[in-house]
Length: 70
Image (cartoon, rainbow, N blue to C red; front, side, top):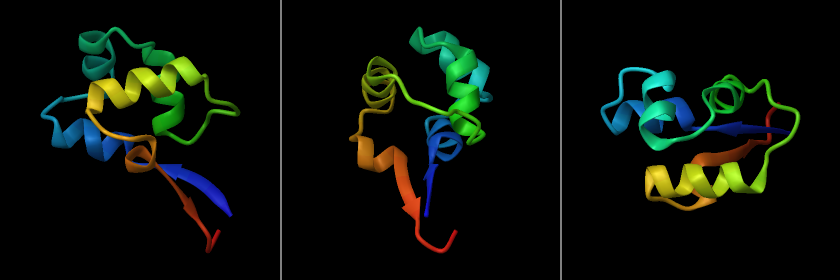
């Protein structure tokens, strides 16, 4: 099982042109958002989760999901 996310989809749905634009407009670390969006992060800071949920106006489960087939 692997943890995956919908970050790139949510960014596009909200009308942003890039991860960088999204991060800058929401005051979130571009580096961390990019790593999460590309499934390259080894850990996730709780404050970053809260910032993402606030920026997307959603719950954590709307951003992350477990792919059971992996």
